[in-house]
Every structure is written in structure tokens, then in C-alpha cells.
Image: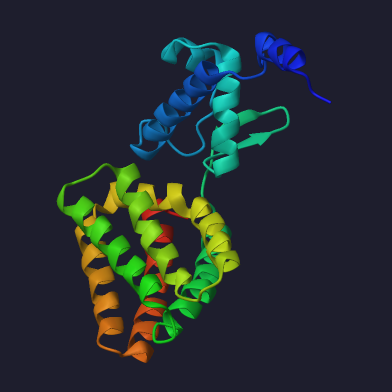
Length: 232
């Protein structure tokens, strides 16, 4: 039985493992590294050295180590034995595999436009509007990349399966860096926005077959553009 005395003792003892400030420092460091990667200041394949990064960001090596762990978990960096951590270098086989998997998931969602709930369809519209607004506002590469991929995940949501949405979210993590690099090289955000508007318009018009074919072509073109832009 817990007494008021024991409760008071527990409160006085506190929770020594909670580190709000430390965690926020790790996240700030990870966010700055993400920005540098997406903006092209740190290129694909670049080693991420703890000492140099700690000096540049003015934080401790343990903080950098944890921040790098965040990037590894997000698929933006890889940790290899005896080589340390470096920024992911997209490979052609990976790009093809991810794009093929995206087609399966997104195609399944688009095919169920008519059966989807109004809430699911509205999520697609909202995701598109948020993305196109950011394009017009000339958002950062990182912002546009995230919103672009969020729109594609919203298409998967039309299938009504949280598991499929979770799978799609994991897939897009693997493409984030490659797409950001393509955007930086090709500077095609406005073209991408127009393409997505055209896709949704086909769905709004009730032409699901045409929208499905349009999506397939779009994803195939995206794969070819990534491979060409990055010289894979």
C-alpha cells in the first residue's frame, strides 16, 4: 500500500533519467544536420565526423553521436563498422525498388478513391493544397520534400489501412534525400505541383482509371529523373 510519506519521498527523489534540455539539444543538432544535407552543404557519401561536427555546432561529442543516431534511424545516414557514419548515397537498385513498392501502395489507394471516406479524400486535397502553397511560397528543399512525400502518403490513405500508410511512410524515408537532391539539381518544384494537381483533378472528375495510369507514369518518370539527375 502506498502511503503519503512514500509518495512524498518519491517526489523528492525526482526522476534523474529525464533530460529535457539534453534531448532538445540532440534534436537541434539533428535538425541542423538535416538542413545541411537537404540544402546540399553536406553531400551524399560525406563522412560525418563526431569531433569536427561537435566543434562546428558547439556541442559535445555524445550529443553529436545521438544526433547521428537519429539520422541513421531516418535513413539519411548509415553507420558501417570501421568506417563510422556517412550520408547515404542513393543507389539505382534501391531507387527502383522503392519506386516499385510505392506504385503498389499508392496505386491501391488511388484505385479506391470512390470507396474512400470523405475524410480520406479531404486529406488528399488538404495535403495537395499545403504542398502547392509551399511551392508558391518557395519553401526550403527540406520543407517541399516533406510535403511532397506527405501528399503521396495521403494517396495510400485512401485504401483505409493504417498498416499500408505506415509502410508508405517508411518507404518515403528512403527517398527523401534522393528527391531533395533532384529538386536541388532540376529545380522542378512547380512542375511537380502542377503534376499533382492534374492527378487529383482526374480523381475529382471520377476518372479513376485515368488517374491510376497517370500515377503509374508519374512514378516511372520520377524514378528515371532521380537516376538521371544523380548519375546512378
